[in-house]
Length: 66
Image (cartoon, rainbow, N blue to C red; front, side):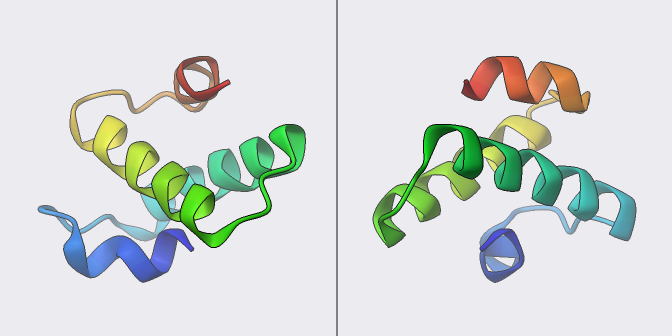
């Protein structure tokens, strides 16, 4: 899901940044048991937006989204 939203992102993420965002996404989806595509897309967008606005620490992203 994260990868599918990258073309919409203002700044491209490098491999390490993409991996971090994907880990956060996978964890939140698992913990919150997110099922619908709309919820998953919203989560992915929120992760990328937060990351681009300076929340680049994995734990900080998780705290923000949980």
